[in-house]
Length: 251
Image 1 (cartoon, rainbow, N blue to C red):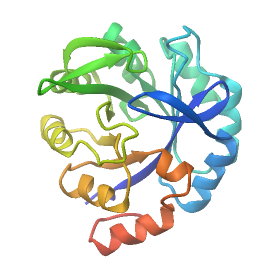
Image 2: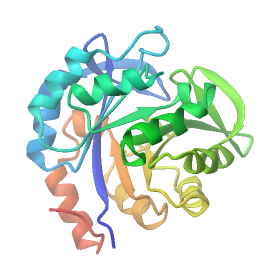
Image 3: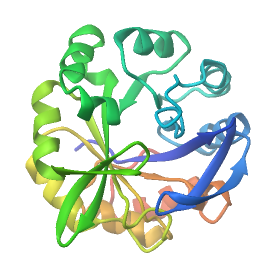
Image 4: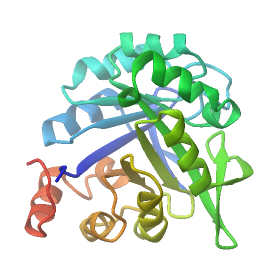
């Protein structure tokens, strides 16, 4: 059985780590390089870095920030935000990223998934999907959750897998920042829809939420931000608890 992964997420805006609730009301959460180094030291399995305003501002991810974070850690590192071309991906991999995350650009140009998977390999391509439960239907949203679409979460997940994505990062906009737990019913359905790993995102508030998303949500990895940024959960403590609940995890 593959071990489950714990992934802190750095949402970056104006060079700082930020965190909000339901994708709005952002507050400062610290220096991204310092946080990244601390998470590597604590034993995080991977790190995700999302330049959350890059798409909205029609610019590329800040390469200097990616370079500094990559130099500070020794764990796999996924970078997303403003990625539209093969050249963008090449630049980020050169800066030290191990994987790239694409979201709005994949929806706007689905062929980009095929192109990138063929160029750098599926193992490097994470498709992030921000979705919201609207009248019991999960709909994909773009540009940092600001643009709703009629695209069904599960149909889109199936398509991105067929196009060559190696992993899906699913964020429930309904749960983001609420600390009320992950969207486990949707996650379980997603895990049964595709055969690639699913990263759960949105809603982590306590250790039990992580236990539940691995057991009930069938997630392969759990991503969180504020509970780590503000010291509410320490990664070594979380991993010990998961181990005690017979969840395969790297200590």
